[in-house]
Length: 158
Image (cartoon, rainbow, N blue to C red; front, top):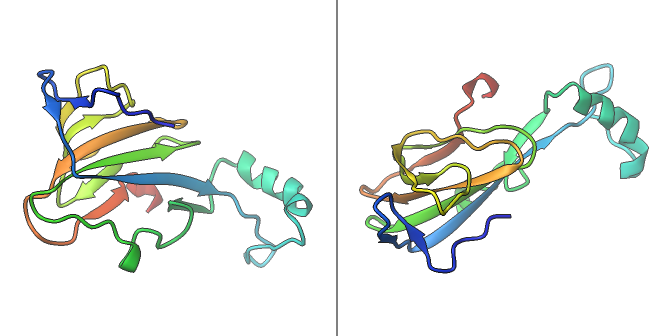
């Protein structure tokens, strides 16, 4: 959970910053067991797969990493949209593992990596770091039209 300051966000000079909208990205890991042929297993109930799921989780290698609960949740009709000149606050959380959000085509004008809004934000970060079990925020003003891809820049997992 991230609670925004009652008196608003402030830049590195202590001046108020404004935004036009907020996008929330919840990054999740899934650990789905596979059968001997490599196919994902299914179970009658969640409890039936408990032992198999725990074994996969103990390997610490997720089978899926998604934004907002499912593959494609932020694409097509569900894409996050902003007009040129508009400023958005992107709030990103990850429950389990460290993540490295990156806005391809943009950057974080102001970034609160650790969700500590009382601290001055970092400025002009291309990629920022969110620790597992925490949330962070980035403020960005869109300067040009186009498609901006929002990704976890941990490319070893891509």
